[in-house]
Amino acid sequence: MIDRTIYKEIVKTVKNKAVTVITGARQVGKTTLCGLLQKELGFGYVSLANVLERQSAKEDPMAFLSLHPAPCIIDEIQKAPELFDYLEGVVDEHIKAGRKRSLYVLTGSQAYKLMKGVTESMAGRVGLISMEPLSLSEIKKVEEVPFSVDIGRIAKRCQAYQVQTLDLYDYIVRGFYPELYDNPDLETASFYADYLATYLEKDVSDFVEIKNKQKFVGLMTMLASLTGQELIYDNLAKSIGIDVKTAQSWVNVLIAGNIIHLLQPYHEESVTKRIVKRPKVYFSDTGLACYLARVGSKETLIHSYLKGPMVETYIVNEIIKSYKNNRKDAEASFFYFRNFDQKEIDLVILSEGRLTLVECKSGEEFGKRDIESFSLLQGSRYAMGKNAIVCTTRTIYPVGENAYALPVSAI
Image 1 (spheres, one colour):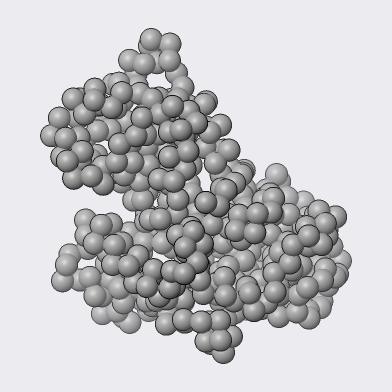
Image 2 (cartoon, rainbow, N blue to C red; image 1 turned 120 degrees about the horizontal axis):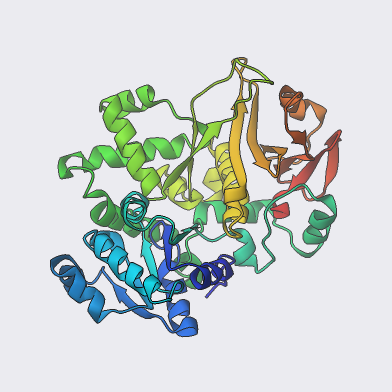
């Protein structure tokens, strides 16, 4: 089993909050980490994926909670939303009795249902953890810290750890779900075929009618081919043959299931008023995106128009994972920037009152011309940190004032 950076943050949250909520896409490793919590912290465990347990929770929530007293892990709790109101009362009783921490761990793959239940019933008593697929740092067993353009740290990191370009394309096509690395013999296409079927059956059925499943898959396939691009609902709806409201609703289903995420445009009045205001869409896992886009090998990816977007998706995802896995995402915000002249900055990180600008590239040789768009945010009310082109170079080198080309192993 691959050690997860976020596990220490989960333990810290469990020890300091009455209830800890862990969300994340299917098969990101939530249940595995719950197994560790069960052993190390002495929690009970029950999964509502079990039909009998789910029926018990729905029909008599109070009796269910009596049978599974705190401290307890309740896996896939969104399958029995009836539990939330009863949990509130049980947690309140524990708090009145002086036990304010380490009561329940709740997990689920449908973030909307889970968060809705929690915010309505137990706001203020809950620690929230969002789990992502594996990072390459975790796979390679190297230290994972929030990304910053710290040249000294990155130089040391790159001396000990490098990613060959062809290997990077292999990782992008393989994706980052733990089972793919626990079982190296597992065929990538087989894994994603099963993953997609399970996702549609278990997570999507509550939101999308059976007759529309094929169109929903069509929307997923379209979005996979658009990863790293602006999300234009009109175009999406026309391509799939659905109305705009349905397209927006289905996109929200994919966001709630942690299948995709949106990067909002950066806006600051002191810099410019003429900016594009649509978000960009990214698949949370490049492997699933490649499977849907029929990119089945690194050779196919290398010759595909999707090579650049998939590398960009990988880099953006890894940077965000580096913050989430250390629970620093609440202290940082992530954007992209594009003006009406189509000049763009792939990633804008706002953290500790400082902006870091990042271009994401497949390629090795870059110069000042490739960071001209960085000047668009001169005059920002925020301090400007060191900036970067993260790319497939093997070496670190300057590309302009306070800007460097960095290998992907810098993340």
